[in-house]
Each structure stands twice: as structure tokens, then as C-alpha cells.
Amino acid sequence: AIIEQLGADGAPLRLYPSPESAKLREAVAEYFGLGREYAFAANGSDDILNLAIRAFSDTSKSVAALQPSYSLYPVLAKIQDASFTQIPFNADMSIPYEKIFASSANIFFFTNPNAPTGIGFPEAAVRKIVEGSNAIVLVDEAYAPFSDWSAAGLVKEYDNLIVTGTSSKGWGLAGMRIGWGVASPKIIEVLDRVRDSYNLDRLAQAAGVAALKDRAYYGRMRALVVEQRRLFEEFLDEMGWRYFKSSANFVLFEPANARGERGANVAKSLFEFLKGMKILPRYFPNEKRIESYLRLTIGTAEQMAAVMDAARKWAQL
Ligand code: PMP
Image (cartoon, rainbow, N blue to C red; front, side, top):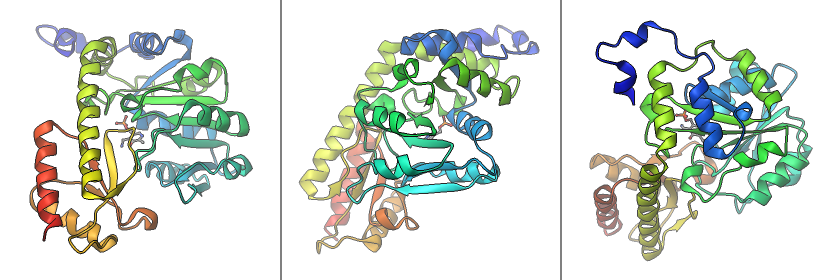
């Protein structure tokens, strides 16, 4: 689709792209079974998170999100000079509803499935948050393609709900910077007022349309990731290592060494061991609650075999 858009000599690039990414919005709306007036497209979903903060927060309108979740939200709030409230998950990583409802934030970010835990929450949880909250609720669904549902359809029922998605994970197109959001036409109109006039280039728009339309191919690719995730969780069970059952394309797990010890230093030891083999999980020395955990992105069957082999070797040291 990108090559077709370029033509033989790149001549189409002399022309500006569609300012509202019209065809991509249509493809997004069609993908989620919504009218086109509910759809928005942006330069990656980070672009929409930023636009939502610009539109719905300022020095007197605060921002809130659960902790731990995506680390970009507080950064964006800071740029806007908006105060940011971190609402900690309950000890068992369940949702602290009452604290969310008691918050005075004007916009609340709910990452579902969550990052970095990978925990996915069901429709009833999203409905409860949206119905009980005074804020505009932005459900960040970057990882939803690896779960079994999306809240996108709910925007027809709630006009304080924005659901964002991205081609970066579920479609393997992070380099193209294609993100989207769905929300009531009233919210879309506000996002349109604050976005760049041409926030997606021609190539990205064409790639986004092609990606969203090829459901069969991406369905197969996601099934491969989900299968490798199942095998990796089986491996963690076998090792007796704790983990959060994942609805995303990564797993957050707590390694134990040969002496059965866990903790920040143990996680660091496995992190360094894997890094030495050019395998790079993430670890969170500055996040107290998960400092003994590593987050591993699910890769190909060969990559996962290499990780599990290395982790087994480390566990015997
Ligand atoms: N939301 C979450 C929870 C993420 O982890 C990421 C990726 N870092 C994004 C949004 C942004 O993705 P992108 O801008 O590539 O669409």
C-alpha cells in the first residue's frame, strides 16, 4: 500500500495529505462497527494522549491514572502544567474504584490491558469506571489486540469516553506512527481543534487503511503471539515463578534464583544475565511494587526458546 501510494516517482508526495485522514478514519470506524463521526486518527496513539491532555487539562483541571501504568501520562500532564494524581492499584492489582470516583481529575487514563502488568479488565470494569467517574475517561487500548475484547463500541453509549488504539503493537507497525481513537462526535470535534492540521502523512494514512482492512493476516499474527505467550506462562508455572496472567504481548514475572530467593537484586541478576545474551527485558528498579519483576515482550518461537533456555541456565547458577 505504501509503494502504491508513492507511485513510480513519488509524485503524489508533492500534495498535502487529507488533513483529517479521511480514509483512515473510515477504516477505523468500519473496524469497530461505528459511524465515521466517532473516529479520529493520529501520529501514533501517543499523539492522541497528548491531544487529550491538551484539550482536557490545564493548571486548574487535573489528570489522574492508576499506578503502575503507562509512564507517559505524568510527563504529558507536566508539560501542560496540570497536576497529576497517581491512584495506586489495590495490593492484588485489582481496581480501586472508590478512589477513582473520589478523584477530582478532569481526565482519567485507564490502560487496558494494563502496562506493565499485562492484566486485562472486562467490560463490566470499564462500564463501572465510566459510569461512576466525573472525569473524561480515556481507555488506552494499545495492547487490546492481544486480549479478547475492545471497549470501542461503548462510545455510542457514553459521551465521557475516549478509546485509543495503535498499529504499533497489534499490527507490528510502530515505525509508521499510526494511532487512532474513537469517541462521541462532541469529543472528536474538540480533538480536531487541537491537533496539527496534517497530523498523518500520506504514506501512514495508506498503510493504516491497508493494515486495518487485512483482518485475516493480522488475526493469524496475533494468534502466534498469544500462543507463544501461553507457552511462556506454562514455562513460568513449571519454574514456579509468579507472574500476572497476561492479556497483552508481554508478561510481567518475578524470577527466583537457585536458592529460591526473589527480590530486586534477583530480578537485576536475571536482567543482566539476559542482557549479556542480547536479550533485553525491562526491569523497574524505581517502581517499588514491581522492582522484583521483569517484563518480557513475547517474540517469535525461536526467540522465546532462546529466552527460556537462558532463563533455565540462570536459574541453575
Ligand atoms: N499506550 C501504551 C500503554 C503504550 O505502552 C504505548 C507504547 N509505548 C503507547 C500507548 C503508545 O504507542 P504509539 O504511540 O506507538 O501508538
